[in-house]
Picture 1 (spheres, rainbow, N blue to C red):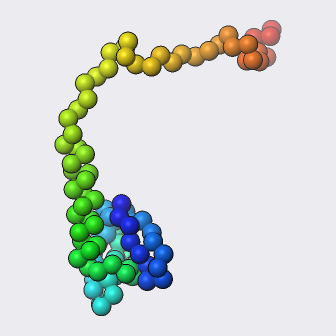
Picture 2 (picture 1 turned 135 degrees about the horizontal axis):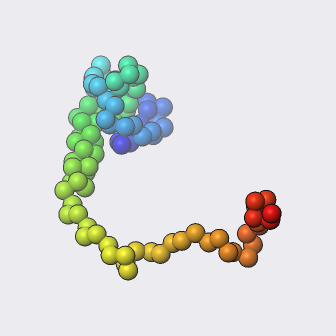
Picture 3 (picture 1 turned 180 degrees about the vertical axis):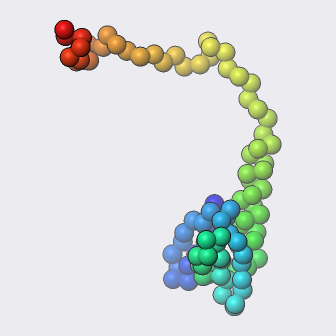
Length: 95
């Protein structure tokens, strides 16, 4: 996701994977794969750099070493609580 600025000055976040093309006319126009267009204050090269940085961060995160699996003793123990004092009995349990 990249942060861009509309010409009105408001910032918005855009999914960089949905960008089909960028045009400089002289304003920067971002065209998405569905045909929707955004005119942004950032220059063409700034948008390209943001997309590169975003994709690079995704690739870098995928290159992190896998964490070793936890043993059962290391995992938090969660279980269903059927005998809790505030639990109201169902109709079937009352019969």
